[in-house]
Length: 272
Image (cartoon, rainbow, N blue to C red; front, side, top):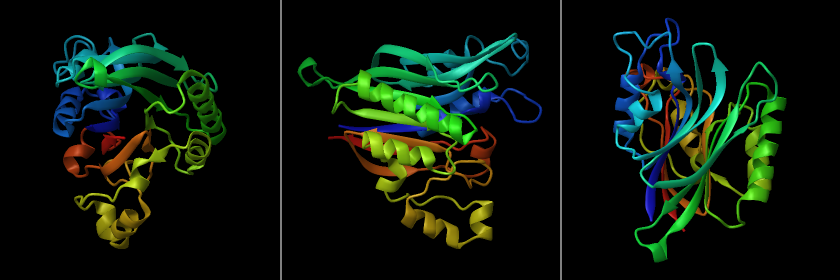
């Protein structure tokens, strides 16, 4: 069974400087990606300050995004403030059963969460199989990320059956690749960028300035997603267990740069 998955930090669906709504562009992005499962970070499901803006959406942000073709979804609220809240979310074209949100905040200044959901795959009851989905957004401080990674590993080892298929995706803020080492060593997961040859992608500003970079990234299995106008850092990752990685892709260009400060990471998988 093949499926397409994506992880995308949507920056609360607003522009970076003026904070104007651009959630319509995000929904167009999801329609363009056309993934079976999307892991979202910084979904601002309520914002009373923007609700009266002419370009604001009706209903919650998650409902608005799900209207791009996702019948099943779940949301984990992480940060709460007087005018709203935001957190992680999962959109799926497969049935989502149970889901829980776990507070993995390491200190009061950074509210972080881990959303765990179980999706059911398969066309008939005899061939149905549960896949565990974990959507994360880790902290900016290295020590915080390592503690959050340890929480994730402990959770998987204690709560998820050994050998069950897993997809872990999100914004790891792990430019030093310390969390990457922990997850690989303790969970035996693989990261899609290192397992698949990168698809041909449009050139960015940095690619023109550093023409050697694109070829090196393809050989090394690197998926640069931040900042979206000239991706340099590998903040967004997808880790899998029980899947073969067929391909991975990071869409680039001015259109994507206008949608969020992160570019999405997209992968084609095949269940073993």
